[in-house]
Length: 554
Image (cartoon, rainbow, N blue to C red; front, side):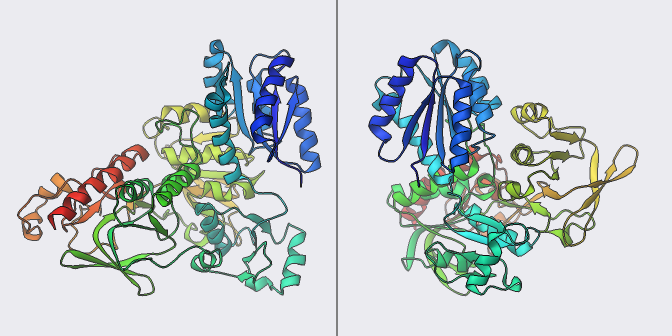
């Protein structure tokens, strides 16, 4: 197979030659560096590469070119290579245009001329973008293949597990993809054994597997390396990942657990655009990948899918019982299990869960709804990010909200993007009355909250982003919670009516410490949390210092 291509576009022959020279000097061993003298030539080259089956890893384009601006070249290239990384090469006077292109052309980065020395101003940017491309790219004909039915809840569960755990795979729909029958016949897989996972190494096929079987087959560790830990973190969202990074870096024996996958709800976001330090935005999966890699490099262990079912307090030790009966012991513990989406109460929703009704999961199911009509329920940032991602694939996306609009619940940058996306329609003052279909979603009945009128529309999938509740049911009864189930910590804990009855230490509880000494809570699970990725990261980082303080006292 040919090397992936780095395509450079500039109408100035000298600049084009200079960029190609610098790129070749560093990347020619693993990439082919090509050039184009105009935007149209670049698009033609991209189409030729696509026809040959080659991979385009990155497109670097000058902004000011006759005939077609660089931002337009980058935007139009998405139709041919949606996964390629896009970098704009600009003069200082074009910085404003570059920032505008971040939204309009889905630009990944911009570089200012001159880029000398390339070791400082060019290569670090290209390295970072290529790392991201390598993590997201999956060659068409190789790798892990999952065969199943599009409207099967079991197939959706395995797709979601693989995607959430950052495992690249190729989805093959048994009624559509012609190679499925050959694969199934060769392995003796029956239709009643789907979904089935086929491995590139030719090893045994996994038939209708559980997520833990998939993890084990892929060589993911499911057993703790030590008998006792300094810090066990339950929940690998932003708060848990931050605690794992700082815990490991500061010398604590640190274990991070999650019942499903790293990233939490933030990990499923197609684009987070207001996180500090990422001016072009960052996907939840990419932020998760970087954080997990950082935590593991520093020495933290990560195990998933492992669910904690019970916590017992044994003096200064906390004994965590896992599903299946195994036990892990730790001196300090962080609860960072965040929140879960509530089941939508409309008639027919539960019957179609995983068969056209999905909670979150926009990035998992988006490729399968190409050309279809979908509904997004909810008006928060997660709903907006999901709608924008789905709009890249679906024929039409409708956002259904009970409020008068999106302004009360969604960030302005998302509202602006939604308003500029022609295949997204916002339906305010509307709610779902029922979902209908034979084996999968086919129709949705929508009711106007203004006049009570009911309209039935042909809809292929419903993505729900409403009504979260804290995942605190696994914690022991000694951990005090508020009326909604959020965990009380620090000063909020001291204000609780039951505080004098349960807290028997001579000291006051530490910030973020629960009513059980040495058990901390951070992120969305905690009462009073800010429900922002940045604040969750801050709390997770802060817990490590508090854990040190607690361990010194105990």
